[in-house]
Amino acid sequence: MSLPPPIPPPSLATPPKARPTELPIRQIPGSHGWPLLGPLSDRLDYFWFQKPENFFRTRMDKYKSTVFRTNVPPTFPFFTNVNPNIIAVLDCKSFSHLFDMDLVDKRDVLVGDFVPSVEFTGNIRVGVYQDVSEPQHAKAKNFSMNILKQSSSIWVPELISNLDIFLDQIEATLSNSSSASYFSPLQKFLFTFLSKVLARADPSLDPKIAESGSSMLNKWLAVQLLPTVSVGTIQPLEEIFLHSFSYPYALVSGDYKNLYNFIKQHGKEVIKSGTEFGLSEDEAIHNLLFVLGFNSYGGFSIFLPKLIESIANGPTGLQEKLRKEAREKGGSTLGFDSLKELELINSVVYETLRMNPPVPLQFGRARKDFQLSSYDFAFNVKKGELLCGFQKLVMRDPVVFDEPEQFKPERFTKEKGAELLNYLYWSNGPQTGSPTVSNKQCAGKDIVTFTAALIVAHLLRRYDLIKGDGSSITALRKAK
Image 1: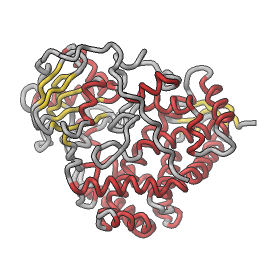
Image 2: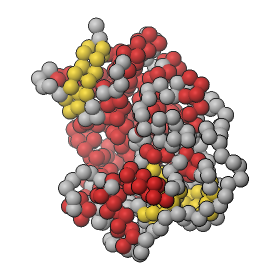
Image 3: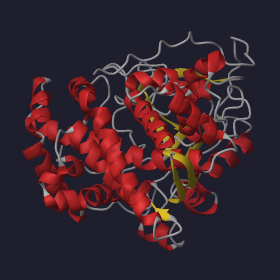
Image 4: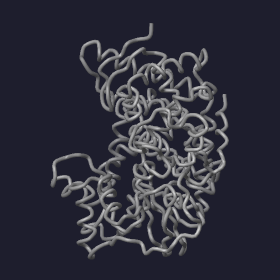
């Protein structure tokens, strides 16, 4: 079985409420503040007093602009080698400049100007940190796309079989309790499934990995990202102990070595394909681990609970409509071909990605001086300045999306819905785009949405009713 080709994109159209083509020049509003004090003040607002979404909203309202200067964590005093100064771009038009590789450089900007130590990836700069102008980028991107291509024949059966194991566990818990917390079982399901399809490595062959592989990845991810995320602990303890300095690789070196050795021993077939694209065996393993652990496991761990909540706690009548579509249009056996007919299920997946993109921030550094345009103004950007888009606000752009704060399951259906996919940017590019070596769009863009849609369809074929939220299931009624 091979992956279906992406749906042909509709022609890019000017968003609703078109603006004049000749825009007046406006100086970028906002300020980075006093050295040390400005970034520190913004950091406290971002993590403590306002939280990320309100942090950007209040400044957007203050400056009457979706483009402005501010600072994002991590910041001073201990991150002396990190420049927190950014230009925020918070509407679809200005944000889209981040996909133009002629304008922006994507070198080492995955999480802004902060770059976790390369020790976390075997002293190798894996592909996600490389700009398209770097020779190694094409090798790593081709390797990533080939991994997905080669896994297509086993993707669906492994997904369904491992998903059923996960659901059996939830049912067993519910038989003795009024609710079942599913985050940890979900992550174990994801780790096993993704290891099998991406690395062709079965965790059951290594008892230590089978038992603790997902927790090893969690620690590896957390230690790298703690300076940039909020974990909801008591303030000011979180600020003092979690956001003030980088954490050393030594804290997770044993776990990472275990994961590395597991992939090296049991993923030989995939590793060999990496060498065919010009990567050394070591480079192939570290890139594969990053794709598996950071991109896939990390992304799905954030996205799937939101998707489950969208269904289990969604608008009245949504489950009935989804169930009808999954059972009547999904075919006798679910597969990638089934998705062509599941318009509402696909729309729910897209709408969940719009409302809650798994990667909140996207960055790009100006490759040269250029003029950035929003709807009403153009702004002069200097070479080297860092652009930052907070996607949760970008994809609630009222110029593009009607009632942008509302979850509308049918938003991406019919012709108008297909046109809106041009502005669904969760994958570091539009949903209608295609990942290539000449861009930084997620190599797994299509497989992510296909997988999510298959999970929804399978759930609604297995159950007549699902109740719960983003962390627990409170009721499951098996299909008759």
